[in-house]
Length: 140
Image 1 (cartoon, helix red, strand yellow):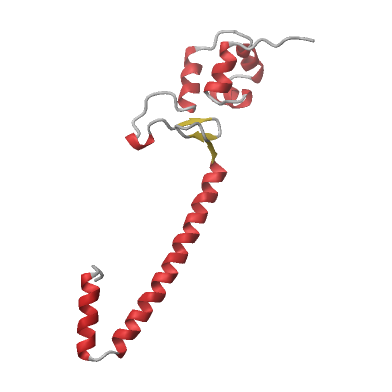
Image 2: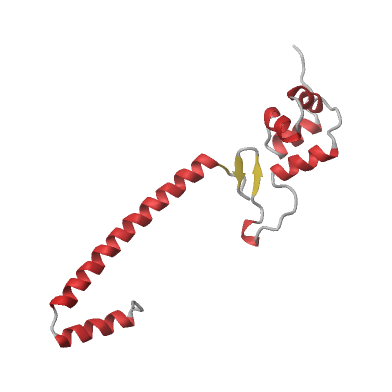
């Protein structure tokens, strides 16, 4: 049985940067064969190391502090905890949140219609009371 030697280059590419051979080849404008040679221990050019670090979010950046510890690795957004998120999962989460917001807006609209109806049917003194309540709630 042939033993496979795991090199520092492989660990850097796969585990630290989260990049496949194909992604690395495309990113660095090299062939998959060249990436395989790097994985076997051949020196990775400095510019490619920089590109791989940039792609995986390992370089310093100007993002706000709330993103500290987050990074990109291949097709994943990696949380400080190490949890990986795909773009598809984030889009689905965004869609679910939009649906919830739309439902809340529909409920709010229903309540506003009820309040308008009550105001329209109220006498002058009742309207003033309702308007004071609404003003106290910060609704203009």
